[in-house]
Image 1 (cartoon, rainbow, N blue to C red):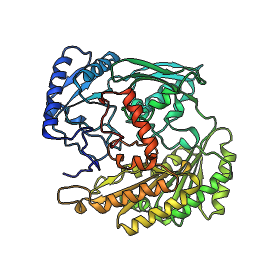
Image 2: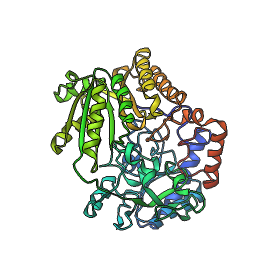
Image 3: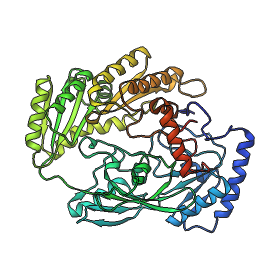
Length: 488
């Protein structure tokens, strides 16, 4: 079995992780499951076969916990009941949406309740005049825009997993996506939240109005907290008008990935704010050619994929194309919907890749200031050579967010199936390099289990301690997703 281990300490959260601790946790879980049965609108699942689909997320981390149960909540009251009993019995609660996360944030813990919100999947209200939508957390992200389209509106955040991820999960990690460069991340589209706290209390944060500065911004605090401060059971999100006029899609091929990265700064200097500005590197293009039978490398070893939208899209596309031509690009501009889909398929294929490729991936999502992006690309090339690793780069380069993914062939794994030390060393080089350039260890995936070891290096001791104190204030018994985000 292959696995990506959580680094630095036991995955099960606070405590020593001894056999006696595990036994105590399992006994507490048994008591809690007994108390839950028959008292919920939803379903309680216990037993190895039934809970197995809820053990892991898409991070590649394989949870080795000795036992856990699952609650499929069917109401807010279910979530409150779980939290009240978890506080009483000292049972960890792991909130879960669709399990599409890449950081191990939804991975089960020994003796825990995995609290699935997938059945809370109603679009409660669309208010076209106020341009807002009220949803439950289990709503699939793409479904919001589909429902709002009737009113000429859409939900702007667009993670690559939009067809399978949930709004609740997006809120938990402050998910980004392809169009963040113009329309922002999840936090920029959330007006208000309904949140169940660790003790089972239900609080409502934020406003239905666009503006609102009454008291502390608890809505922003909850967004990106990965289920460690509270459990989102409802959200009021902003909708935006569907852009008028045809979208212009630009594919600009360059002789190298570094040249494409440098050219992205030329786009910024035009003062055009494109709706999308993505980079795909040489390694991805080579793999796509081998898999799909394309000839992308014949056009270049790095490509920028760009879209402009709105009534000024044509003029903006012309400015961008001229800037890229001056940088030596092989440029194609299209307003044809089918051709645009074909060009953007290059971006989609980077996420899918050949199912026959036998490797595991350390998914990184570092981000750096836009002005340091070329330095980060150069550092990645150095790490690739110095650590002898396969490193693929896909970037939301318009906002400096890079997915520099380390690919480890199955035959290079350790004898026990673990990721080898040189791959983790490459990951450490990537992440510490991003911090040194004024960046962050995670742009949109979150910290979860797999990035805990680097959080202190980014935050520093004072802020790390302050954030831990906020966690303790809202979750005094440490039951909400313990062991995630913070290493100590």
